[in-house]
Length: 94
Length: 157
Image (cartoon, rainbow over all chains, first blue to last red; front, side):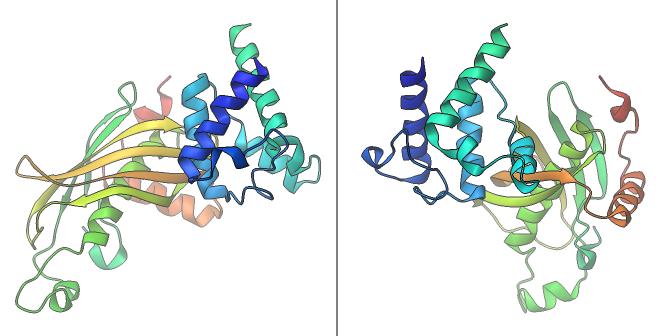
């Protein structure tokens, strides 16, 4: 599950942001390593939402980061993002 | 259309929250200082204002979908096409469809038609957030009453 989730997300990022696919790794931080800004991330979120049939809770995540209750690594390092996606997909099917 | 105030929508003609679509009317004024400069002897509705009109149409759809709890702000314009001139005095029919209702953002596809012919279209991204100032919400509610925003939409679903 995780590897296919990662492949889907990495392909979305590569296509949406014109980033070489090989540069996108599970350890990559979408903002700090890949240079994706918040506006570009909306296109990624749109594609992820559609691909997985979920709604990434970006507002909640942003609020938690702004409030110091979470770090950006928890949401925007790709392996962590993929784990969140898997969790949302599982919750949807439950 | 109160073009100098950037209030471009005159009337909500149709709002379908199940179909996630909206249609509005917007009357381009015959006279405006904008047309004196854009352009002398060849007055045209500026393309950026047509895009803004599509953004405002999309915005009313988002406001209805969020039951007047959120304010949309234009964030990105994609695939914008201005197919023909729009001139003073023309009546615009503007439609928007909500493509995606994301967390803190929305994507729409909008178009402008004159006399049944599509003249402009674009895909728009809107950031959607709580009203940043209560005066803005009051102002939007006043505008909603003026343009016939269907209050029953707020009770929908």
